[in-house]
Length: 317
Image 1 (cartoon, rainbow, N blue to C red):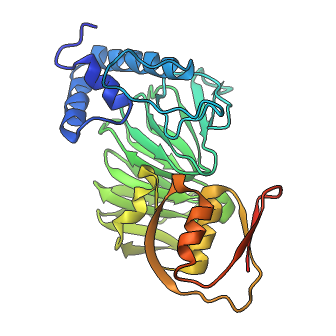
Image 2 (image 1 turned 30 degrees about the vertical axis):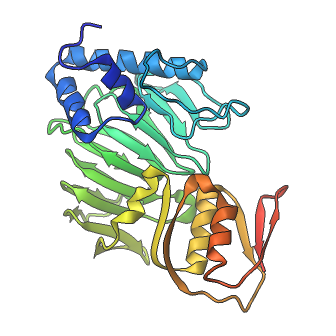
């Protein structure tokens, strides 16, 4: 392959999410060394993804890929943004378009409820998209700011470039960064916004308002009563959704049920007016499914449930 300093086997394990942190650092350093290395990375990424889409296992003895063959479903497919394909097989929606005034290919990824997607953008920025999220972004960041549009929740590890700020545009606020790690929760249908900063610094603005909010690490900005309120991050487990975990700390039973609606794309109807609403702490694996989660919660809350599969409704009794 002609790659100096990086073994192809390490790259393939990285694409499959099996590398150690020190190996990931080495890969990032190698990519930053030259444009040729970056092109080689995305070339190998494209080959890897095409093999997966064709149902093939890349020829590497240490690589393990799990398939639900009947539904052709992959729990977390990692893919490079340079691949322009239409993949509409019940996992996620991915399309390429061109803007009217600029010859820039735009990519759109739509994640179904109950799933999550990990992408690497053309500048090296790593993005995790949560259940029910939609992101639109250019195939390559040529000039000016690196702008993407988000409806939903995403976790970003932004590649540093002081000449090209990275901007996340949502239905309420915009977040601008140079290089950092942060989480954005902004589902337009919920009318909510939360920006949480784990590393670096971000600037939050809103079109039509003069106010600019600068957020420091370990703090989050939450919209309450149409105003941003800055709070300290108390629970970092909530960001483990990118690992496939639903984590909650001191949350009410009803709020937990509301989160299930987001993750599993279903409606939960509470029929029991005397249902208790205790505060609960715990975590579930997204892949365990909503009924498993409900059975576990029955240990803390006395309730029964009935599922209407045809209408995708769960009744809490």
